[in-house]
Length: 319
Image (cartoon, rainbow, N blue to C red; front, top):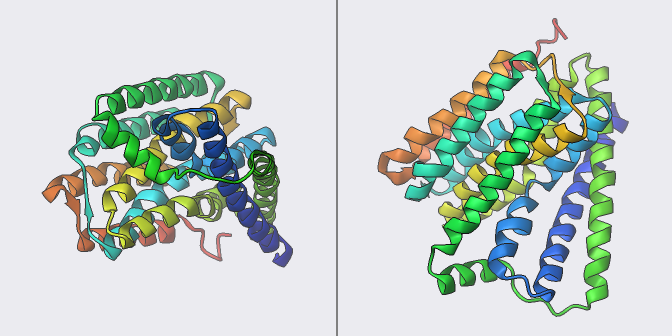
């Protein structure tokens, strides 16, 4: 058991370090090639925080561990709203842009409903995955068009702030790019290996491990980004990051991983799917009231997550 936790720790370290190096190097290389900061922000950086989930779910699906792959996405979407939005709101009340209420949150809810419906047979087929990938392409294209309608100087400056110019040698960027990718792959393998060993040692399903340990672990980049944004009193960034990540988790991660290998998770329960839907739907009225998520509402989300964990985790007698 101790060795399994060691694999988990090593996997998280390599995954997060690899994601950070990969995203920074990719953004730097793109800037060197003359790619606008807006494009970098909407692609490389926007998807960067979901890189751990993508690699872990893809690796798990390739190894026939659909419980971890699907549990990772469902669990991450639950954790993102209940734990991360909840914690960030407790740290600092989160104001919400009208666009999130009009478009992004309803889209996240619709995709959550679609995912729950597709998972009633506990499987994501290649056809399901193709639908998600098509949706991802359409959503990305729409994001570009929406961004293009904003004042060019203002939006370009916003993304340029998040991608400051670098002065290191191009060979160092290439080394970070390749090294980050290798670390992501090795880290995901270590993380999945440790998760499987813990599931077997505790006599619980891989799906539960995917829903909890793996989901929370791979969501740490979102947790760090949103908490820091809340501390710096930039809560619009915090909640935007979470909603965007949940959309990408469904469309991008399940789409790519499902095209590579269909996934099955017979242990994924209706409680898990219901919790994903409840938290996604609850975010809309919470955000609508006063265009903000207050501290009390954040605490309510955190309490809801604790209750969900208590309901879904098997008791010692049943384990």
